[in-house]
Image 1 (spheres, helix red, strand yellow):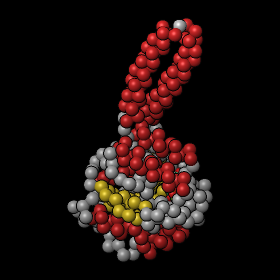
Image 2: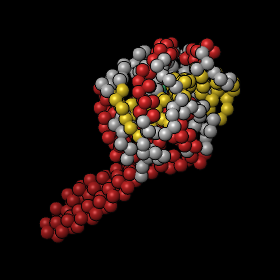
Image 3: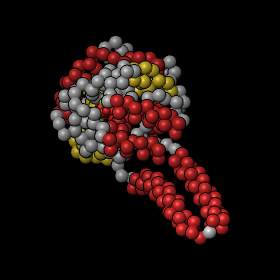
Length: 322
Ligand code: UDP
Ligand code: MG
């Protein structure tokens, strides 16, 4: 295992003007003990507040700060992949801009990486989020572990360290994954998780709406496994067999009790029909998800577009990043 001499931090930013000054101070203070040299790549995910202005000023004042501005709001994961595109250090650490992930944990993450792991995840202790998010996360984490076979306990924690080789391969996959460790797991099984502290969001509300969370769930189901398709086929076969059995039973009862009884049987057939129709809709919906992904893939639309950069390379103007 090669030594870690440099580290790139990738920090997605969406309307975080209230948190950025404090985050910058914390980074400078908390990364002081680090022997490796560091660089912070802030990716402005189409913020509408002064975030980009603050990032540009910081980049001009400190050569360790780099800014990338995306063409519009593409979402946290696209922003992270835009940051990955600029990484060239020995290790890459991702963290949130809202100070929920304490930068003071970064040296420990890198320590684990140096022990011979390719990916080190943070496992949030005493999560400081709404109860709803905590319960949803608990079940999501179990589901994700099952569906992807990646043995992590906390998928939502963005405080993670990766070796550059893994980041390079993720970059080459050309995909913007919502479950970055699940993508990383395609390349390595040297993954571990260490407990990290979790703070309350310093300023503002979570940038995730319920709609965005549902989007993440669908991404997971179709992005990393064929499990829903298989489960559906099994379910479909079982339904069909059950339906046949039920039809046979109705026929028998019809002969046993006569035509009068069968009139009521019509209604039970209706019930059966509804179940079938429901199952079909579910199946169509899921198939649609896969087809939608294929459609996205064949169109080769850029998954994000860079508007401007500051730091060691300054550029203006929109350009495709992928
Ligand atoms: N974020 C982003 N684009 C978005 C939503 C969020 O870049 O569309 C950033 C946000 O600025 C923050 C991080 O992603 O740095 C995590 O977002 P948030 O704190 O809202 O999520 P939560 O902590 O509630 O999971
Ligand atoms: Mg947060």
